[in-house]
Structures are given as structure tokens and as C-alpha cells.
Image (cartoon, rainbow, N blue to C red; front, side):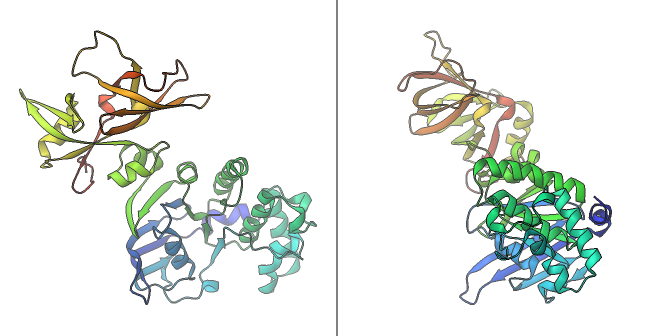
Length: 382
């Protein structure tokens, strides 16, 4: 791809938010002082539940929402009061926002024509973008002759031809079915590698976040809860919100307490006091530093093993639980279990399917346990 692909890496910009806040006239605070730096050429995803402030943050970067407080810079230039058209950004929305009466070619070229770019340059940029996005044979079609995925490619192509320093995506795959979303995720990842562009992407879909982002920004109630690589977020969540939000099914969060006996530390579950979980060395050090009277024990479903209860099961080494639901998913199965007032999920291989109502023995992978302060929700490792 000439033209676009050859210049993108040098054109990519750094985006920096310092204490960026959004408060509406009604007094509602949508975003509480976000600090975030998106490095040049980086793909950063904002993720969180509805109303967490992720789209508002993106719209402030785009200039579609005013900034109440804080500083926003793009490539070192403060742009708080700079109009969207002068920020050198391109935005792709959830709705394709294509002109229905125009061809794909004219839709992609429209912004360049408004800027009165030479016809030869427009043709070259549109051709290069269409080739990259697999639209070269569709340039003379109108949007109604395209599938949903093809329309979204046109919307992305319209952004690419502008050669902006920053691409902004606001839930661009929400309107697609599951198969198309998966296909478009791969295409976006490939596109980012080809262009080397700075991309800031908003989604509520954790699969999109985990598969696309170099780094992920997890937001909740207008605040950033954690910024990290997908692997670090999954393996070392900073708090119970992040632990419970990322992962499908989410991490099991079980109330308990830290106890010490005979020089060793144990995690004791509130609803299974007979089970004392011996802490591995790294968590023993955490327990020694902690002043938490109550804790939350976190363990992901794949780090639990359920097996039929044996009559000679040693007491205190496993948890007896009742099967409430078994979900066979082909390559795996999910067991939804209950022990007293405690519910949790186990992910396992598609082997023997325990009967609903039967009792199973559950063991935990001690090296993969997480401990959180019950009062603050913050990881004791932090």
C-alpha cells in the first residue's frame, strides 16, 4: 500500500490527558480527572460498562464534548479549545454514517474533496485504502448494496484516506453479528499493524478489548480503575471490579478472612470455615504486610478443579459443593456450584457431566489465588 502505509508511522501522534474532567451543568460528573498517555502508534482500548465515561472521554479527545478541567494534548499541542476539524483526528462511529446516494468511492473521497485536494491525490488515497480494506471491487456500489461489515469498512476507509495523526473508534462493531465482529476484529488488528497508527478505541465488549488493545483502560463510574496490557489485567487485577469485569465467566470472588496458625497463613472462606486454604510463599508475604481484617478470595473458574466426591475425602483440603447447573460448550463445560450461601463457577474439560444436585469436591490452584481487601476491594498485592 503506497502513500498511506508508507507514511503512517511517522504521522502517528501521542495523545495525553492530564486530569481531564467532564461535569455537566446539571452537576453530574461523567469523568473524574482521567490521566492517560496514548503513545504514538499504540492501540489503546477504553472498556467498561454502560455509563462508565469511556465514550465521553473519547468525545472529549475528538472535540465533540467540552473539557471542564484538565489538559488534553495531541502531539504536544494543547487542544482543549481547538475545533474537531483542526485536531488532525478521524473518528469512526457505531453508526456507519455513510451518504446513501453516494458510491463507496465518493463516500471515501468526500472529506478530501471538501479540503480541495488534487483529484489525482484523492484517487490514489482512495485506491490505496480500498485495496487495504478489500473494497477495490466495490468502489462503484452504493451503501445499500453492501453488507454491514462492508459498510463498516467503508467508514474506516473514509477515516484512513484523511491520513490523521489519531484514529478514534466509538464502538464500531456493535451493530454487527457475532461472526462479523470476529472477522472485523482481525481486520482492525491487521490494519493497525499495517498503518502503525495511534488508535483509541471504545467498547463495552471485553473480547474486543482483550484481542485488540496493546493496553486496556478499564473505567468504572467515570474513573480509571486500571491501565495495563491484556495479560496483566487478567492475571493481576488491581481490584475486585477489574477482576470481576474481565473474564467470561468472571473471577469467583468469595468473602473470607486471613488467619495465622503455627507460623503459617491461611485464607478461610466465610461460608466454608472448615476449609483453610494454605497460602503459597508469595501470598504469605502479602498476608504479613496486610492489615485487612476481612478479605475477598479471588480465583478464576479455570483455576478450580471439580471431581466426584470420594467417600474417603480428607477433611479441610477441598470444598464440597452442589451442582446447580452444568453448561456443556463443546470444547469445555461450565459448572455452576453452591456451597452454603456461596455460589461460584468452575471451568473444566468436556468430560463427565455431573448431574444437577450431585455433590462434587472442589480444589483450588493455590498459585493462582488472588486476595483483596474486603473494605476497599483493592488487591493486597497492590
